[in-house]
Amino acid sequence: MTEKKRIVVVGGGFGGLNLIKHVDKDKYDILLLDRNNYHSFPPLFYQIASSGLDPGSISFPFRRELRKGTAKNVKFNMGEVKSIDFAKKELKTHNDTITYDILIIAAGTTNNFFGIEGLQEQVYTLKSTGEALRCRNEILYRLEQACVTKDPEERRKILSFTVIGGGPTGVEIAGAIGEMKRYILHREYPDLSTDDLKITIIEGTDRLLRNMSETASREVLEYLGHLMVDVKLQTTMKSYKDNILTLADGEEIYSEMVIWTAGITGESFNFIGGNPEITRGNRFVVDEYNRVAGVNDVFAIGDICCLSNNEYPQGCPQLAQVAIQQAATLAKNLNKGEMTYSFKYNDKGTMATVGRNRAVADLKHIHLYGRPAWVTWMFVHLISILGMRNKLTVLINWIWSYCTYSTSLRLLLHPTKYPTKNCRRKQM
Image (cartoon, rainbow, N blue to C red; front, side):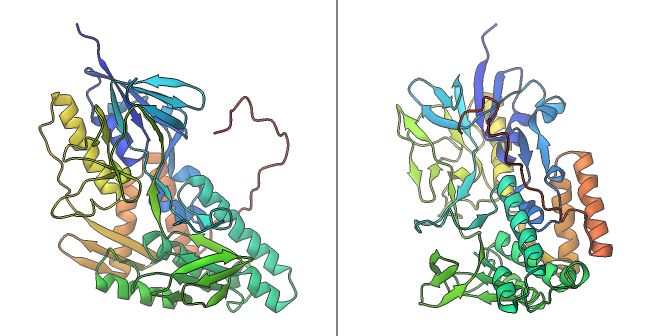
């Protein structure tokens, strides 16, 4: 018998998790490495931020998932990769050194602030469960603070929200806050009026949802209008300081809470003993088999890789479906022992929601809007969440919120200050 090769998968998102489920465990020893001990569902981060769902509804512990089914016998380590040594074939985390025969990078993306000085420390983001919770707490705190503020001008300052970026995440969080303004404010915060809360969404191009059809863009613009959200198109941000947003054309907007959804970039690593080819957006350049250019025995899948072809000269879109399909194709090649199946993206469509009964969906052969698109959006996202318990929890929450406009999740929870010790955890 020959010793099994060791595959190390960095990142337990859509790509990484689907890959380990399809790889033959009789041929490979597999280790999954992630900075968190759970898989989460990024398309619904905005619902955590707007108190629509709790984090546990869209998160699933890796160790529970790896006990059963096709993921069984996969090992898991929690750690953040600090460096990759291609010559020695090893990874260094904050507390361990891990060797590999085959490395698969599925680490995804993080926020891109386009070099705007000091922006990361001042804006709220939605690229992780922790960031979404931070955003939720700030929104709720501001609503509570505004309720006890007597000065009308001061109340309007406290409740000044701006979303930067008109992609799916941007329009979804803007729409969620818009629903709070239109439907929740008078029910749960009777001391406030809709005039007190102002929501603005800023997009640098000439329309929202640039990667969807023009019809979808027009419909989303109309939906946001119904929810009293101000939209500024063909407008870019220059700086943000002392609660003043300065736009490229010189206009200044006062906003005490800015939610940044305008850009993403691939996760960064420190490379030793090799130089993988990196392209725009800090993405690994890969071939049709997802092999990383410039190094051996290294693959990349999902948002962090860039596969250019005639159909997608700038690389495949950074969507969950791309990562899932790349994972399945790469697993087939690894199981076969040779690169036989080249990857070709099967576009199943794109969708976005702005609120109840307000959504758009560009599917393969049909465009949906309004309630049909909203129901389709809910169904697709519901079946994509891991675990039957999670699916039921999300479904019950959605049905209850739809019928009552109420939720038990508008809880303002802050961690305690003490103790200050971190249980032997090193700085990550």
